[in-house]
Image 1: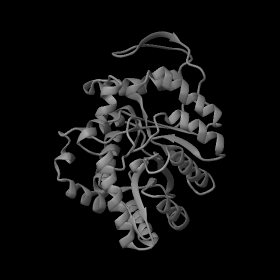
Image 2: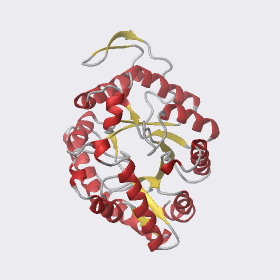
Image 3: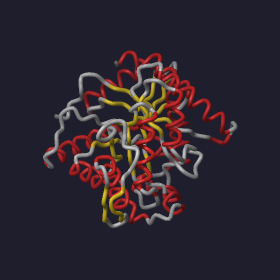
Image 4: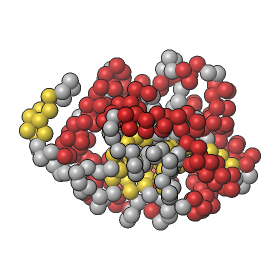
Length: 337
């Protein structure tokens, strides 16, 4: 039941990175939106917008607001959130905004929700780290019930209200397609027990991702939930170039940027096992086990292998450069669809 579906689907994890602040920030948005226009005219299913705060790793503090802008300039591309950081907002507000985006986009929303892990964000939004998991989980439940019920009454650990009519309701009934970001065993088991589909992150090694996917489907079956036809998008960092050597250089530079600006001790804490590994070894780990890189032909072969070995049937591509995105769109995507 964990075998991939017949046809592979593709989305793009769209960051709004501002490395070194080398160009004016409006240029970052302009370039990203131009790529989204290309996605709308190509074979991509969805652009998945990444929410981050207080970091040049990706300057997109509102995926719902960005989603509205994307909806206005595209015709068929689905608009995903990867993710709405649900720990930081009142869930009724999330329900309203995502439903509004769904209506005004003509029912093109894929809602992805996550807890987040950046300690700076938790501190700034005054969310204690130990509360983040239960707050996130309760928020997701409130959003879904607000969409499904005419009026919602809720008495939980963090939210309390009676007979609230959340308007608008989503265009896609009873809810838009939705996923929760899950990386650790507890999060995977919780999602499976609830029957929620999961999004899988771009920072785990390929083999680890496959192991997590298998564990999720096993837990899903044990909880008595349907597994057939379930779509599990997996995000992978991508570098494509003329030669394998040039692609490896791009992958290495991208790994250095990722570790330096985001996946480090400042964001996830020194207790994170990954942060105990020396920096050079972590970079090598990304290059050799996390990033899909090479010439177009090599990337096609790698993705085909990952489809067979880890069940990769929906790739959320996260290209390290505009050139990698263009080469992936032109030279890789048509060979895998």
